[in-house]
Length: 142
Image (cartoon, rainbow, N blue to C red; front, side, top):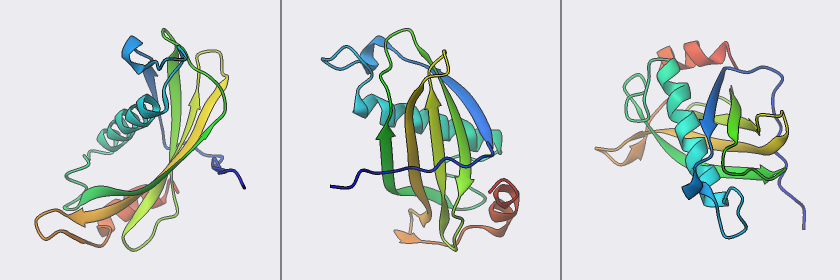
């Protein structure tokens, strides 16, 4: 079975740092896969805030996650501080992807991930176009 491969672009749009909490560990005493997804969510919120947006207000649209891919590269443990390098990729009419390159404090690779984010109108329960203002702001970074 072919493995998932997440390509990390050469540029970075935003970097954040997230500590691994004791509650992020699984029975193997390392960062659990569910906790990593939550950490990616925290990173995405910080990325959007950096641009003056939120998941519920992206220039008049909201965001919904269409897909996620995570390629695990190494372990992470309690007390680690993860550096997450993020970039916008694959802009489309309805959204974009965000890539996440997750490293530990020693520079060791923990994971590579990608989330497919779509613009969504929660009132009407349907997709909407990526606002032009948002496209212009993030396109220069993609």
